[in-house]
Length: 194
Image 1 (cartoon, helix red, strand yellow):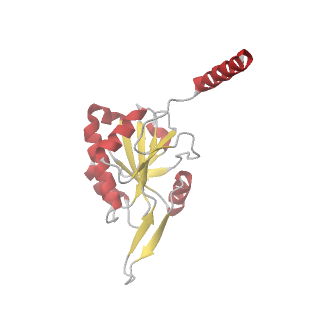
Image 2 (image 1 turned 60 degrees about the vertical axis):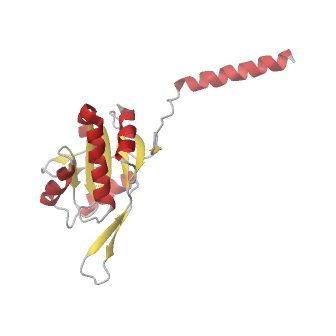
Image 3 (image 1 turned 180 degrees about the horizontal axis):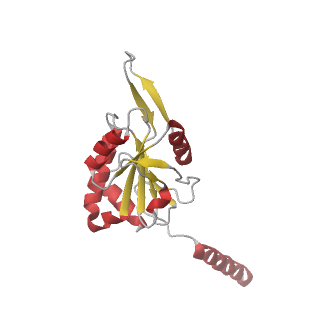
């Protein structure tokens, strides 16, 4: 019997030792995606005409959302929730960068993005690029999007993945936040990475 107790004790000590290097589990409303195969890589132009990459924002927590300015529902709702989350974060908001990447390069020009994106919150940045640049960025984030013609054929909408990707200060993917999270939930989750 003593032999079995010693073996059990040895196994417990091994389990404790193995867990020493593991990261603490996060309590998120969204999904912890730490270690996922999402590089966050992109080379796009911001709404002020500067070429940007994710690395430009190291030292800040970065929240990335793919959408388009003519989106009738999810995009403006998510952007407004992100803006309200920034307000809730108070002074911590200066350490967060929200990036809006368009999935509608035909219509979302630099001027359109410059009017749309900062209207939600002054520090938000809109990003655009050539169709192939956007396709590559979307692949890197595992985002899908597709044009859908209206019934009369006069215009189109863009179906797209909807969610916010959060990168820590080192530029590592950490969380995926659903588009329907409240500002309070978004603020809570984003501040986990300060």
